[in-house]
Image (cartoon, rainbow, N blue to C red; front, side):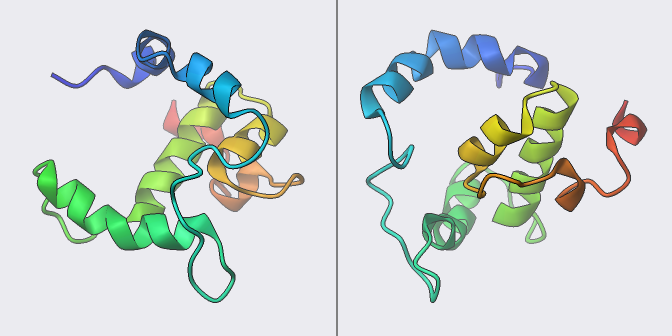
Amino acid sequence: MAPHPGNAGSELIRLHFLEYVAAIGHGPLFPGIAPGGPDRKRAHTLAKRFPAFRRARGVTRERAAFHSFRKCFVRALELAKVDRDRAALVVGHERGFTYREYNPKGSTWLR
């Protein structure tokens, strides 16, 4: 059974994710993912790999794309009141990223 989204922080702690992040130090969160596409960003490679990842886990809806997953994740960060600069770092955006880019209606409609 998948963990409840409200327990995501606890699940990340159980998986020793914080220790992993500390060990990585500065730089990409997942250095093994090669940059790709015309802009040489890792998101390009992740987006290309995502369909096989989701199908292997039984998600067959074709419109369940990497970007929709990313958008949902950003909304969850906003609802959890994660500082936007920290959220930008986790999502792979430049500083100055705003939640408005992913959620123009604001977070209140999700509650």
